[in-house]
Image (cartoon, helix red, strand yellow):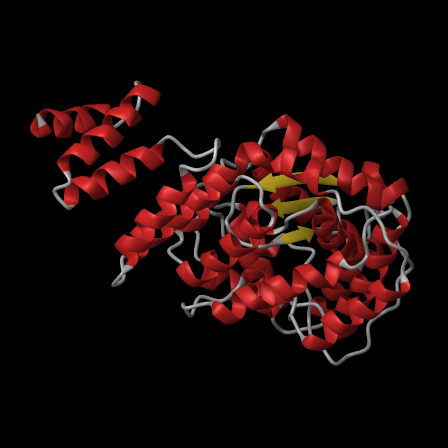
Length: 385
């Protein structure tokens, strides 16, 4: 998987300051808005446009036309007349995050796409970011930052990052940088409320907003590593916030959940996204992700295979038996990955169950004759003979 650029968090529309100074009230963004050249807003847009040029050529971009069109269509349903002002970049980063820059550049990270289970959940996250965009919260923060002594350092940091050709990645650094620019409580509530209004107006099921937040809280509370969450550094997940969304949901009419179209768009990427997630070695968090995906009763063979992979990689006491059980469950479904046979074969080989190992490994090669590890598997089979 490509390395993740440190510049990404600074691009967020999720940049906000906690300055106690009163902010200038700005009118909502008009469709087609472009700031006058002589304004500070134009300078901010110029910086963001430099970032965007880097994003356009980034190895992190997911360039799948079907997936990009699907996410862009979802954005346009919510943004309405502002659709033409927003440019969407899907980035292959296994963290839950979406963001909007003030010039209309939107990022959607694949960790969000993996964790959401339907279109409505994704729509409410995108609607929240569009809310920040329309209320011009990033510009308000920029104006606050200009009044701070840290502005010079901020510009130096921005300039340095823009010039980085090979991007470095560190979640802790991203989260720390994000915390310097986190939105105020009022701005977050405004974005929640406006995003909710836009998304329900687009016809989405209102109860999915709070449901996704509760899933994220469950994952956060299960985390077994100290690495901070990039998304939570700018969007504090509080009970108050969730209860507000639940209250709004109870008042709104039922709407579209969109599970089938969402799964159709994400399914071609599911194996890649799960593999990226597992490579982070955040087993407690990943287990929560798998639990909720398994509850959908969709792609069960693939999910049970990755459940086995989680146990295999975690390698705690008893995990070998749990991995075997998960792989065996995967075989009950038509969508089980071919690699399931390989893993079961290697487990059987480890326990000197040679006949069963031979059956599984031969089945693997028959189903995937061009496998990259075919020579290794053939060598095992020769030893068994």
